[in-house]
Image (cartoon, rainbow, N blue to C red):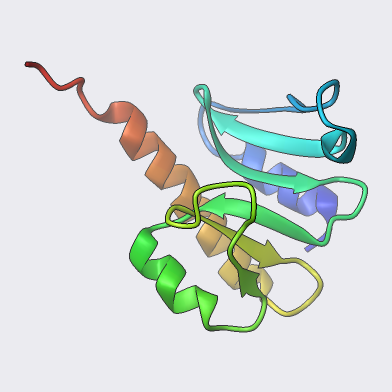
Length: 118
């Protein structure tokens, strides 16, 4: 999947938008394109390198995927809830789309939770 196809797929979900929130803050993060639902991110990748994307993921699925080629734990986010997916042919387009959709749904589910009362 190329960069435009992944971008289009991410933006195909309801109430999503994109942004580059790190452009002015971190030298190595100027080209990070982030996809949001509401104010929560569900996918991001570096548009200059496009070597992997980072997705929100179910902790049990992360354990399963971490043992497979093409997946690794991110260094800059919670390793319990996020995973890096390699984009250079080691992970099929079908698997990538499935993981992006699941990431989106996890974030939406979190947004829909009602605040806990004391």
